[in-house]
Structure formats: C-alpha cells, structure tokens
Length: 286
Image 1: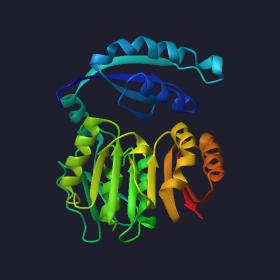
Image 2: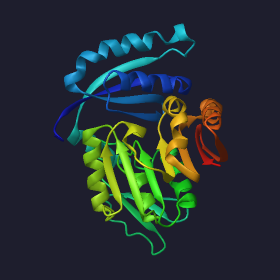
Image 3: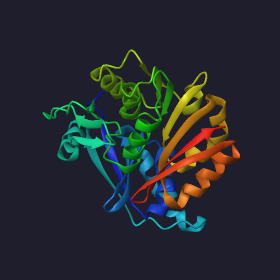
Image 4: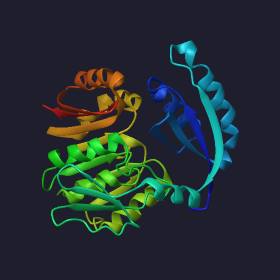
C-alpha cells in the first residue's frame, strides 16, 4: 500500500484563501492537505487513480473571485511516490523541543532526549503532523498545560498521531484518535506502538465527531476553520462539564468566526495563542 502512487497538487494563493482552497481539494478527493508559508501555498495529495479530478479542482479554484475570495495565483501538479515523500521528510524533519518538556523527533534521529524531556518519536510516512507547523506546535504547548492525569481525551484528525501520543505521555488515561483516511490510520497506529502508548491510545477510522462515543475531559481539533465552525454545535455533546476544547488550524482573520461559533454553542473562550499568522485557542464547557 505504501507504494501507491500519488499526485501532489500545489496551489499558490494568499492565506485568506487557504480555507477555501483546502476545502476544494478535500472535496475533490485529496486525502490530506498541508499548509506551507514560503511561498504561501496549500499542498494537496491526491491518489493517482483520482487524476480525473484535477480539472474539476482547477475549475473550482478559478471561481474564487466570483465569491469575493482572493484569486489563486498558480496550480501545479506533479507525481510523488511514498518513497520520495519519505525521503523529502528527512530533509527538514528534525528533533525539536516544544513547551517545557515535550521533544518530537523522527524515528531516524540519533539524538538522546534529556532526562527532563518527554520524547515523541515519529515516522510521518504519508500522514501529516510532525510539530514543524505552527498549529501543531501550539497544540503541543497547550496540551502540556491542560492534560490532567487520568483524563479522557479525543483527537479529531489525528494524522501521524502526534497529539494523541503527547496526551498519553502527559498522563491521559484514555485517548481516542480519529482520522478518516485508512493509510493515515495505519501510520498513526504504528507511531502509537513505537511510542509505547497503545494501551491508552486507540485509533479509529471514521468521520470526525461521529466516530466518538461518550464524553471527554479534553478534545483536540487541529483542522481548518470551516470544519470547526460547522461542527461547533456538536462540541458540548461530547465534553464533560468543565471540559476543555483545544482548536487550531486557522489564521487570525478567521479567529473571530471560530470564536463566535463556539461561544454560540455555549463554550467560554479561556485562552488564545498566536504564532506567525496562525492561531490556537482553548474553550471550556461551563
């Protein structure tokens, strides 16, 4: 399965258009998207078998100005194989420390964590989430502050499993990690096994919130603002009284819309953190 051929769809566009670009890529078959800052662009990854979706993607993006969105500057497509993807990660995925204790490093790193560090070892494969992006880094820092010993945690859109693993290593008693892509689920499970937390972390292949059961002390959702806004009414159904909802994946311009949707759902904003143009926020169920 790891030898499946993929297409990389690169869309160069202003950050104000990123949410709409990412939504279009996902709707037309991309199994994941990645936001990059230099130059500002959205990367989508489409199975080669879905190559017929390229033209509809281009047509959808060309309509943006009609809806008041900034125009897309360029769309390019090129093939990428799993082995090439993994080699490219090695060029820039390095051991890094987040917050006071967390250290994230690739499986091929020879660096030994310090005695006071909690190490998270990842092999990203074809999944997303290494800590390099500002939104993941912000979530890691907030997790360190808000995870309580023995708490029940959910991670929606787990990717590599990085946040779920961090929650478990910070003391969570049970973590449910959800993703809707079968290959990503496999990669997350391998990373969870590699980090020795499979007794507390369960990966579920499913459709976001609808894959969850019961209530949680803390829920993570590092996904685009459109998803956060659309699913805001569901959040209180899955949070215990006093429970915490950590969200990221959106830029400052969209922060007020995310806040309004979650406050309308009955949550209270507790904290906001920013890094470059990216935002993470903590909401609590009163």
